[in-house]
Structure formats: structure tokens, C-alpha cells
Amino acid sequence: MTQPIDFSGRKALVTGGASGIGEVTAKLLAELGATVALADINGNALPPARERTGAHATVVGDVAVEADAERIVAESAHALGGLDLLFNSAGIGDDLVPLHEQSTERWRRVFDVNFWGTLLVARAAGRTMIAQSRGAIVNVSSIVGLDAFPGRSAYGVAKAGIGHLTRTLACEWGHHGIRVNAIAPAYTKTPMVRDLLERNIFDPGMIERRTPLGRMAETEEMAKAAAFLLSDWASYITGVVLPVDGGWTAYGAAGDVVKIRHGDG
Ligand SMILES: NC(=O)c1ccc[n+]([C@@H]2O[C@H](COP(=O)([O-])OP(=O)(O)OC[C@H]3O[C@@H](n4cnc5c(N)ncnc54)[C@H](O)[C@@H]3O)[C@@H](O)[C@H]2O)c1
Image (cartoon, rainbow, N blue to C red; front, side, top):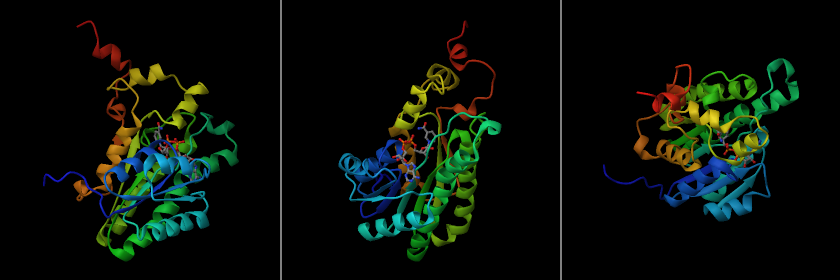
């Protein structure tokens, strides 16, 4: 009952493992005893990420391409000697463009990487896990998949789809001993968000004021939530999309959280 989380002997695949939430989660899983494979489209970033995380293996591929997704899972399972855990973190951001101004090509790419990539890797990993009658998967949704954000239709639809896919797979695979959950992060200080900040796509002050905890998330805070859901501590949790958002989705009032928190009274 009081045993700390321990992934000794577990084999874990982390997609999008060369950066951000994926990389930091891979490092945490390795620190907690897992043998980890990193998969990423960015082949140059994989060797340094392997050094930083202590991962055992790396695979280059595009999760949105079916053959690549199948190969990522097959090569990872081969290198690790099996597959028990999947953290499905590969994803790309969008450009804050309303639908009527968005190109079909860009919309489809944002949707394909985020949703289709998650589905393809989960499906391939699920087949391996079903064969051994155990496994745990954590997908990555977003607060943008829980409520509507103007200008983010492709990303939002993909992330909402990941939530629904997560619940559906949990129901399909539960009796095979496989748990499927997701985290829904709010704004987290990763290279993806730094890029959006540099392009003035959003105002950090506004986000901090809109967040009950009054700050953006650290990447480690996402990694800890993902590790919990992958671990035996979550052994009776499946089909959940867990907001890891500092209270963002709990907040429904108009106005400014910080002003209210530090108000006149
Ligand atoms: N950072 C945030 O605030 C935030 C908030 C909500 C959700 N998310 C989600 O968290 C996940 C990780 O985001 P991050 O902020 O760590 O971003 P990041 O850019 O730091 O890392 C994403 C990684 O995915 C890889 N990748 C991109 N497209 C790929 C593809 N087609 N195939 C394989 N790998 C691919 C990238 O090369 C990169 O290494 C994403 O799914 C993102 O949508 C992030």
C-alpha cells in the first residue's frame, strides 16, 4: 500500500519523446525504473534527448503515417523486449487562424499529427498489449480539447477526438487488462509554447490571470500526472481525461481571477 511508484521491469514507449512533455515524462519513467524508447519525427533531436532522459532506444518516424506508426511500435517493442506502457505525446500546435481563413492542407496536418497519430500508435501498441493481456496508455489531449478556443479548430477537434478515443479504447480494451487514460494540459512551458509566445500568438499575463493557480505549468507537472496514470497507483482508473490545468477548466466566471483573489475585501 505504501510502495512508491516503481516501473522496474516495465517497457515504455514515449512518442514526441525528443522534446517538451514527452522528453520530461520519458526521463521520469526512466528514473522510476522503466526501460524507455523515444520516438520522434525529429531525428537530430533524438540522440541528445536519449542522453538527457536515459532512454534505452530511439526510433525516427512520423506518427501520422500509418507505416511509420506501426514501425515505431514494432521497433520499440523489439528493442525493449516488449511493451507495457505508452505515453502518446507527439503533437504540433496551430496558428490561431479562424476556419474560414485556414487552408485545408494546414488544417489536415494539424488534425492528422495530433489525432490520427495518437490513434495509429495507440492501435499498434494496443495490439501488442492485448497479446500479453496487460498494459497502460496515456494520451495527451489539451484544455483546447475540452472547451472551444477561437482560431484553434483543427487542434481543438483533434484533442477533443483524443478524449473520445481514450474513453472508447478504455471500454474496448478494459477486459484485456489494458487501461487507457489521457491528460489535458493547460499552457505548459515547453518549446511548443515558447514558440507561440515568441510569435505573439498569446499573452502570458492574460493566461496567468485566467488561471486560478496564477501561473503556467512546469513540464514536470505534466510528467508526474502521466506517470501516476501509467502506474499501478492508478490501477482502477481508466477512460479518464484528467485536466492538469491549475484550475483553468474549473473557472467559469467573467473577469480576472487574480483581481478577485487579491481583491479589496
Ligand atoms: N505545451 C503545452 O502548453 C501543451 C498544452 C496542451 C497540450 N499539449 C500537448 O502536449 C504534447 C507535447 O507538446 P509539447 O508542448 O511538449 O511540444 P514539443 O514541441 O516540445 O514536443 C513535441 C514533440 O513531438 C514531435 N513531433 C511533432 N510531430 C510529430 C510527428 N508527426 N511524429 C512524431 N513526432 C512528432 C516533435 O518533434 C517534438 O519533439 C502535444 O501533444 C501537445 O499538443 C501541450
